[in-house]
Image 1: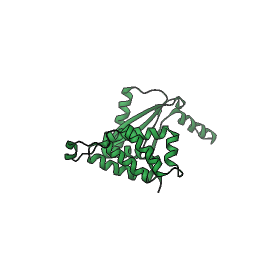
Image 2 (image 1 turned 135 degrees about the vertical axis):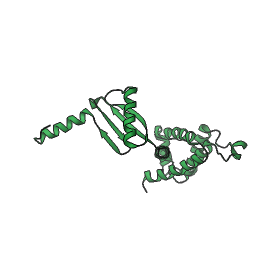
Image 3 (image 1 turned 90 degrees about the horizontal axis):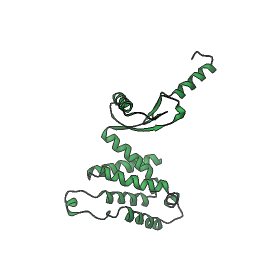
Image 4 (image 1 turned 180 degrees about the vertical axis):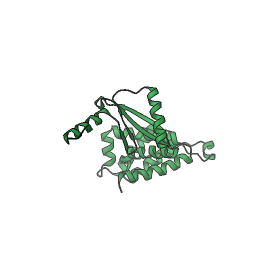
Length: 200
């Protein structure tokens, strides 16, 4: 089974638990924190992925991180317990330890990405990555938002990036679909037509 398929299974199960205990946002924050640690530390990533280092030693490392970053992971108040809620810290710690015991904790960044996708899907929200040659003003952002929401029938959240090499126009990525309206691409298409002897 591929890493993405496994990550999706963890993410879907975690999303169910997060919604049940009303801890969606806090778990997102916890996962973002731990994913960032794994991505930014080559030593930690290699330790978790290593077949040579024993599971016992890996567990010591992970337990130390959990105790430092999530000090309240063992604490659930009586009021929370009666309401059927479990702390996000406890749920996050359980996930980390479960993934560790199945030798998959070094794939936590992929699980976090799939968790975000799953929660967005449940909210009817899509993420659109927009790349422009220069920064886009708020009025243009709103106009683009209305256009994409109309086209997709869903609420759109934007991530804007700039790339001066586009010359002008923009490239929008929504999931696996790319809308390329950049001047750079248009110029490349014109060059290809000229090479083939076609009228631009």
